[in-house]
Image (cartoon, rainbow, N blue to C red; front, side, top):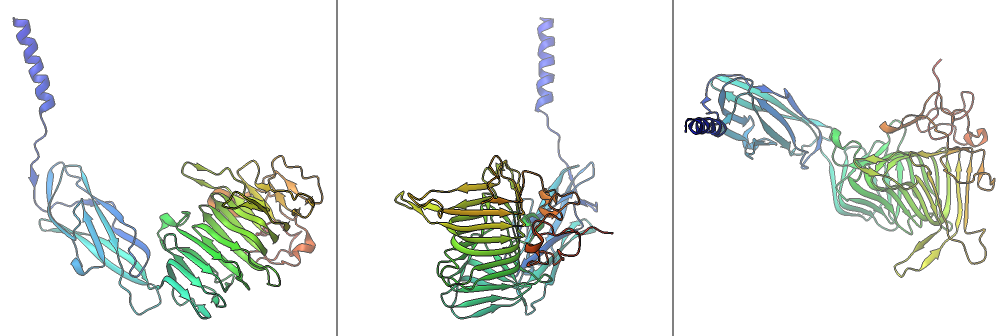
Length: 476
């Protein structure tokens, strides 16, 4: 019996130990709390467009539990900032408990009111934390920018987009037939989720090296800087003509530029020069049955193909860098950086072939992290096979896998399957390292027609021009 009583006593103590919780005794008074930031800063936020939500922590570094008398937004309900304080969506919360050595979150976002200036302006406020007679503050700072909003907008007469303030497209903006859109150097065009710029008429993008034209999403926070898929595409429709893009950056789209049956017949080829297309979740540049001439073009970091030339057409690329090392979370690309194709299959499962008249690549680089970065997907005609597809690579570095490059009708002076040694492809820098095999290896006669690279550097002032869009100049 004594042994049973002893066991029961031990069991009672054991259970009691697990069932006890610390009693909380919340104190008030002038105690200083700690903050994870002194200033919560928002990158440029477009007026009337809400920001991303940022947050910071308030820490109780003391061994006692405390009641914070008040956390409030100094500007109150008229402030352009909004708070969520530990789950309470309010700009002022009183008598908030915080345990010893614990913390709580404060979430902040901002919607900026427009003003009359075209230049960026500053919006600020502060969050006040009151504990007894002690007041502490976290500063709030946002840079505002007025913007020209285009929502389901049709451009019905010839128009110039200027660089006075950015443009923000919701849903779509359409350049109607027989209408011309000119975009000045230094202009920024931002597109909302899934938004597109659609061209039935014509468009000239007149950037300069000093002031390129920028196409990107509407989120300007650092997190979104290299995030693909934030907006849809720039789409040049059948019948569109007299299109050109010079010194532009096209970033963070689903399909950067789509060219559909453009530059045919007596129309001028679609011209794209000195342009960077990067961070596309599907395609950087996709064309079908079009006529395109490109130089100093860089396309990288695309989820499917960087460059897809489909359903035939005529294409000439000079000093271009097609470099795809796409990586996003657990997604791995298994498609080549460059696709050449001369057919499509319609809704009735009918195979329609259209000849690839020309697809020429001169002094260019096509490389990436796949075994083969050149996809040749052709269907043959029943009789005349020769005119079904014509492609040619000269004085270029390519990653061709096991493709036979001995046929000089298709390959001449090609460097195959040798790493071009970009400076930092994982950081999306496709300039050449000092040890690159592409240095001084381009065809001089071709380079004389394109004497400066995408960075406005001369190709003709050292031992020889480099392959690709970038010319490396060694420092003396």
